[in-house]
Amino acid sequence: MTPILITSMTIVLLSSLDSKVYAITTDVNNTFFSINIPDNWSYTQTTESPVAKILGFGPINSIALTPTEFSEFFLNQTKPLSEKMEIEGAYSSFQQKADYPIKNAPLDLFVKYEIFKHNELKVVKRENATIDNEPAVKIFSNGTKASNGINFIEYFFMHNKEPYYISYMANIKDFQKYLPQFEQMVKSFKFVK
Image 1 (tube, rainbow, N blue to C red):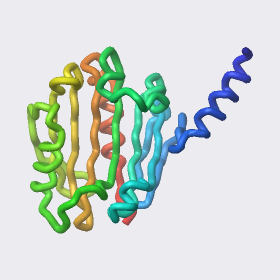
Image 2 (image 1 turned 30 degrees about the vertical axis):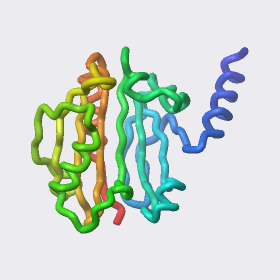
Image 3 (image 1 turned 180 degrees about the horizontal axis):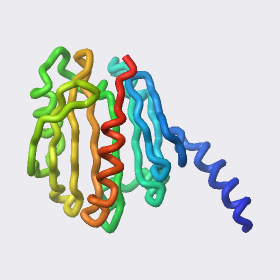
Image 4 (image 1 turned 180 degrees about the vertical axis):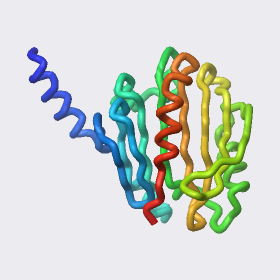
């Protein structure tokens, strides 16, 4: 096959996915927030989950990202991400957490709730942070059990009493390599509303 044919087939395949997959961009917006994405990261953007809609949670706005060299992570949804990352890889997610069931709750309760849900993580460090002028909690964790060998950074914060979550996970081999780009995306995060 010629390179042009392979590229055309790839574009057709990627455009047929449920979420849109992009290779090169700078600024990505959804209903709740925007971020600047380096051109060496691929991403998918989800603006609504049918399950969340049925349960009355409203739209879920999320952007999932990975360095382009690992963009096949988006194609194979049958394996858990931690299994795909056993040898190498990095992945990030920016989300407005419409599935958080407690309304009008303080940030600290949201942090406790999310940490409890992630029982395969061992929290190593916790520090205060700021995301677009909102107080945030930044958690550093190491994976255990099925997530062994993967390091994590998570940000938890609220805006207009709605919870938000940003995560970065990478195999130990790739963690430091992509961390500066992840932190640059975090700094570019801006609320739309």
